[in-house]
Length: 275
Image 1 (cartoon, one colour):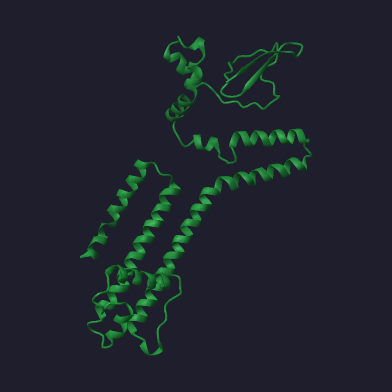
Image 2 (spheres, rainbow, N blue to C red):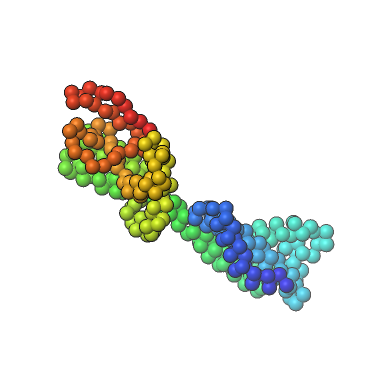
């Protein structure tokens, strides 16, 4: 009857996926947990089969005492836990290719078939599990490797152009601040979502920035939202000039993070603006 319950595995898998979504597990964590659960189920069922087949053939095979004694089945006082752990030990040995010792005069055809089948299936399952974990590792390190590769290409380009060390360090500092050691194509990511979601994201990041400015606190909500939707991101490195004295400016700058120094016409610092 237990074999018929295997048909419920697809529905059980769907329940697991729904639980992962509710717990907000990452893709890597979800797949890693799935690999562990599959391994537990696999070795449990292989242990069951490894015990049940000798128990079944012991009623029909004329040399049942040899096979049954090897798996502690004819001993009435044998605890079920010890029988289970013994079968699990044999299964683990077969799956990793270690096998177990069989005397020359004790060859049993069903035993050979069972051992070979479990060994082959176990080897295939271990290869599948190992490749899945390897794929997860590569997936988790993909952005880092991609960033390092792009950074190495850029460094080689700057060396080829003989860029000064000050500018060289400035470029590296800019990339480290913008990407934080990972690489992503922001434009490609934004192209995958619609305008409404883009506005919602922009609202989430910029609403507090705009509403903290005193002149905007008493403005209508529609006007404030219009400002937020039209904001664009700009990144300035230390020493760069944002606006020069006497320059015609048709935009408003808001400091999200960092410090801006205001200098007069002779280069003397007047005040600092920070956020």
